[in-house]
Structures are given as structure tokens and as C-alpha cells.
Amino acid sequence: MATIKNILVVRLGGIGDVTVITPALKALRKLYPQSKISLMTNHYSAEVVRGAPYADELITFTDLFSTQSVFEFLKPGILYQLYCLVTLMLGRRFDVFISLHNLVKWPNVVKPFILSILSQAPVRAGFNTHSRGFFLNVKTPDDSNKHLMFRCLDVIKQLASRGKITYTLQPPSPEVWLDDKDREFAADFSGRNPTGLLVGIHPGGNTRTYATQCWPAERFARVADAIADKYKARILLTGSKADRHILDKITSQLKIPPLRLPEDISVKQLAAIIGRCNLFISNDTGPMHLAVAMKVPTIGIFGGGDFSIYGRYPAEMGFTALKKDLPCSPCYHKIKCQPPECLDKITMEEVLQAVDKQLKIINKNG
Image (cartoon, rainbow, N blue to C red; front, top):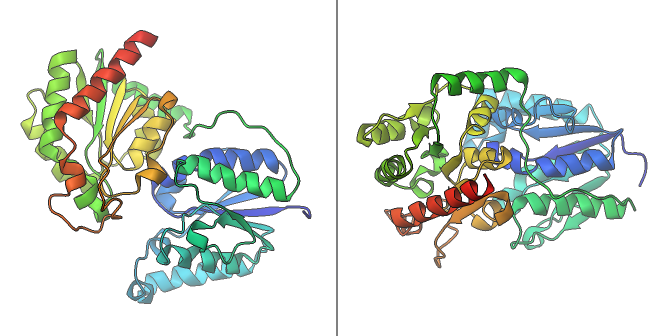
């Protein structure tokens, strides 16, 4: 493979999407220590890796990357961002284009395909999900038995094999790069709210997928009360402004008022505070992955999303997944039943059993 100077990695999506690709970025940096690595993603997701040694440049056009229909592209602001993106891409030639998108459906192909053309890269690597990676020349099988973190590493391994480069990598784990201010923020918050056992709960999720992503607020409230009673734990509720109605509903039902974070904190501040928790319980959404990255024992509750992509963390990473195997799963958040059967069948008893198991492991490891 010719000299590699500029590499473009594309993963458009939420906080969790970028968190789980960090081991792949780390491997890529090890393969090409002298190359410039540019990561293209949404601006709020980019915060996960801002300042990291594995990405030299962050390219973000959030409104453009978040568009879901042709009609949205007709908005003046979107058209301007599209113009800026095309100008940027055509003004620079990348040597390698890497798409870390699963091409589960044909609509998932559109953005990576267009970006691969604009990159002008002679080497184009990524997943060949369902043989849809026609625009790639370094194709990696999309193994549904692996977590996305490991699948992305397979893409990098395939690229290394093409370049006849050998390397070894420690067992992967997602990462978040915190600075001193983030740690100080978390330390100050913890200092103002002293407690023995701190259990974090994230009951919200992506506003577009609330209906098939969020376990019922009433159940979260009852689970939180049970944990507080049995383990004398303090409950920390996390969520954004969009989650306020869920957080308020749970708060009003709790016997003891929970700790709540300011709604305008940064992604890294959230990660730093999650890192102070002894246990974290979350729907299938970004903060769940932040907890894993912060090495906090985590319980993930899965509904209509793709468990095979986001839920197959190894048990040794302290992760417990709660899900139901149904013929309609995954439905990719297209509502076919109300309430969603996949979430409705997950009981409070199952969650509390997972909590008890996790806390026993924590106590055993001291």
C-alpha cells in the first residue's frame, strides 16, 4: 500500500456510536502513527474523542448528518452545510476512507456511499453487510455475533492485512477522554452529595426512538426505591432536557428525592460523574456506553434496537444485558405494538436480580 498521509473515518450517529468505535481508532493510530486521522461525526458525539491522541481532526456537520428525508435537504441551513461539506471534501484528497456503518438497510448505504465518492480515496474500507458494500474495495464481513466494537476492529484488521502490516492489540475497551476540569466537576458534585453506594439510572433515550427504547418510568421508580431500601443506596438520575418529563415523573414517585444533574452539562462531565457511580442502569442509549467506557458495572435494558450491534459486550467488562428474543426483534424502533412487547416483558424482578448479581460481584472484588 502506498504511503498513507490522510485517513477519513466516518461514523455518523450518537454518543454511543462514537464511544464504541474508540478501540478501532486506537488500533488505526497504532497502524499509521504518522498519518493524519480525521473523524467525521456529529458535533455532540465528537466530544467523546475531543483531545484524544487517536483523532487529529473532527469534522462535524450535525444538522446535515442527522437528516432523515429528502425534504429536509431543501432547508437553507442544510443546503449550506452540504455546500460546505462538498467544498471541504473536494478541496482535500484522502488516501483511505473508512466507513464504520452497518449497512443493515439500503437507506443506511446512502450517506457512506456519497461520502466515499467525495473523499476521492483510492482505498475504501468498511462493512459489507448483506453484500451492500459495493462502493468499498476493502470489504469486511459484518458478523452479527459480535459487538460493534469488535466488528470495527475487524475492519481495521482487514485494512492492515491488505497493507501487509502486522500488529498486536490489548483486549479492547471503549474509552472517553476526560480533562482535569471534567474530573474536578465530578469530584465537586460527589463532594456535595456524599453517599456510600451510588447507583445511576438513565431512564431516557433518543427522542426519535422513545417509544421502543424506554422502559416504563413507573418501573424505574419502583426499582430505584427497592435499591435504595435494600442497599441503602443513593439514586442518581441522569438525562437531558428532552428527558425532563421522564425524570420528573420518576422523581415524583420516589420515597427519597434522587440526585439530579444540571441539564446543560457536557458529554465528558456526564461521563466523569457516571464514573463515580458504583452501578449504572440504563436504556439502550449513549450513557450506557459511557458507563462501560468508564468501567462502571452496567445493566443495559434493550427494546426495539439491534442488540447484536450494541448489546454484545463481554461479561468480563461488567456488563449485563436484559432483553427478550421476539420474532419481530429488532424492529429498528418502528412501532408495531403498544406498549412495546420487547420492553413490557422485562420485569422489575429481572432488573433487581441483575442488580443483586452485580453488587455481589462488586463486593467480592472489594
